[in-house]
Amino acid sequence: GEDVEQSLFLSVREGDSSVINCTYTDSSSTYLYWYKQEPGAGLQLLTYIFSNMDMKQDQRLTVLLNKKDKHLSLRIADTQTGDSAIYFCAESFGRATMNTGFQKLVFGTGTRLLVSP
Amino acid sequence: EAGVAQSPRYKIIEKRQSVAFWCNPISGHATLYWYQQILGQGPKLLIQFQNNGVVDDSQLPKDRFSAERLKGVDSTLKIQPAKLEDSAVYLCASSLPGDTDTQYFGPGTRLTVL
View 1 (cartoon, rainbow over the protein chains, first blue to last red):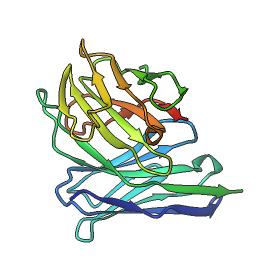
View 2: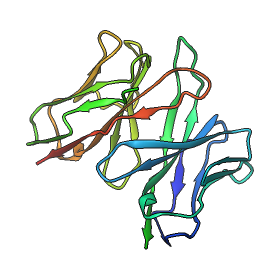
View 3: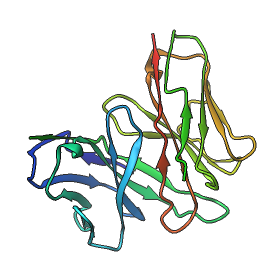
View 4: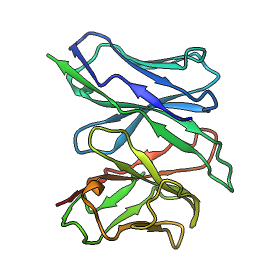
């Protein structure tokens, strides 16, 4: 089945690193995503990792994937107050083609990150 | 490049009333999704279109929810009649089928049913 779990809350001080964790149950997912949601806004794509990769780095963001444990993490270096938001991990199923466009995203419950000055 | 547009941003109705939401995807994106996000939860897929055809509507409560994408571009999602538990943010997303199929989200419509 498809189930994605995240811790609900994380509080850090400005300048520290933040690590947001996610576990998933279905090993057939093709991509895993991290989205950010600020109050009153839609979801903003932060980064994604292909399921055959272990790590991906994108500026202050580092994604680690442990396929054996079905564990995904997002590390934000030098966390700023503007990083305060809810972070969702999501796993995708299916593969789009020009004809089917079939890809399903299953989201976690979200982790609220609070960055204090 | 303009993002996914949605309207209205907010809607308050009484139970048993009807409501409709509109979505305009990113230009050229063939795939369009509607999600329901209840407070404190992650988004849940309601329906997915590929051009003007439905790919997946297994999670759509069809007794009260309907959606269409007649010309393969804009889409509307309707609830008739609304229930208290329909209070949520309704998110529209679009994607361009390809290797990553990344979905881009609109700002959402916050529905409150009284």
